[in-house]
Structure formats: structure tokens, C-alpha cells
Image 1 (cartoon, rainbow, N blue to C red):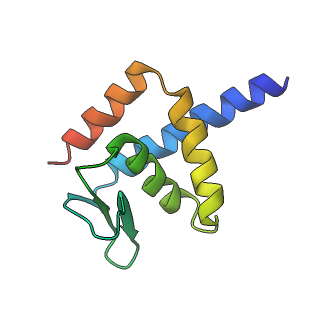
Image 2: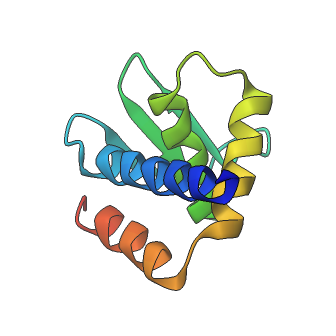
Length: 104
């Protein structure tokens, strides 16, 4: 039963991330960021800034989680990011890349 709940939570989180990627109100920008940041979510401007020199799939997931769960602390976001990244299939990675590519 526990595995079924974990699987359901995983797919729910992935679909929420897909929704963030499809949300035309949220801007995605690639740029060189300072302070060794891989990404930053700016809620004031509804922008996700991604450093293209870093790991952009985990960064997209991480910054999307900040949008989906604004009440979460950074350590909660990091934990969920790591969990999701480790469970992603090749198809899900491809879907994330496709959805992001459609934004540009």
C-alpha cells in the first residue's frame, strides 16, 4: 500500500511540474547566474531563471516545486527534487525538455 501512495505522489508531482512548464504566465529564462546558483524563482516577476551551465532538469524541477509548494522550506524542496529526479524515466525527462522547448 505504501508503494502505491509513493507512486501516486510521484505522478501527481510530475503532472504539477508539467503544468508549471505549460503555464504561459511563468517566464523561463536561461542566463549565467551569480553565486553558484543553478536557478532562481522570482515570484514578483513570475520568472524562473536557469543557469544553462548547470544541471537544468533538476533545476527546473526544483524551481517548479517552489511555485507548486510556496510554503515549503528549502530543505523540503531539495528533498523532493532529489526524490523526483531519481525516479524520472527517460520519457519524463524528454517530456520536460519538450515542454520547455515549446516555451521558446
